[in-house]
Image (cartoon, rainbow, N blue to C red; front, side, top):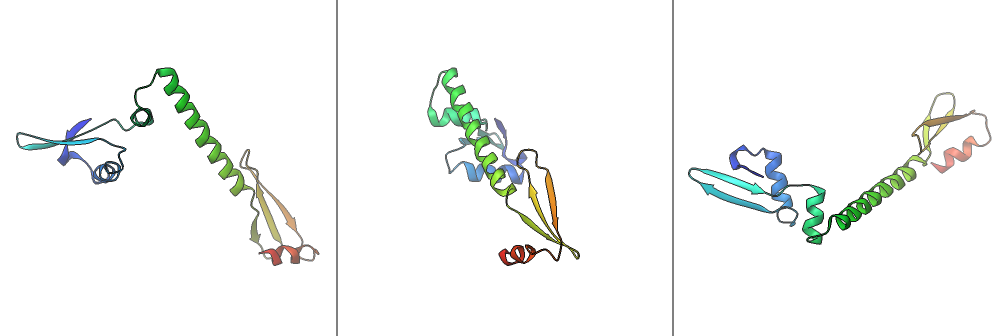
Amino acid sequence: MKCKTSDLSTLGRLVIAVLSPLGLLSVTVTKEKDDSYTEFNNMTIINLAIKFCGPLYERNLTVILLTLQACVSLSLSLSLLITATIPVLHNSSTAVTIRRCSPVFLRCSSESMEPNSSTMSDVIKRT
């Protein structure tokens, strides 16, 4: 992609400044007549995989991209599962409500505990 350097936004300049030294983006600045042009490669995951793995057959590239997608999906699902099953205590004037979120549908269910309940002190001690 080639564009005038003066036409790049602040965010565009920041992205180029960060990704270029990391080797994730190839940048070439050229001067033609009175204007300066910045040329950089297409910033897609496919091009990033080709950059790191070199020339590949389409089948092998597809396997790499599907594996990457599966790993990212699995890690996001696991992090959601871990954070969604941690009980959140909500203090109310009449009762302590323990909320648990179901990681599958992200629905929250509440079970209320009466203030005179024998387990309320156990819940408060844990916090």
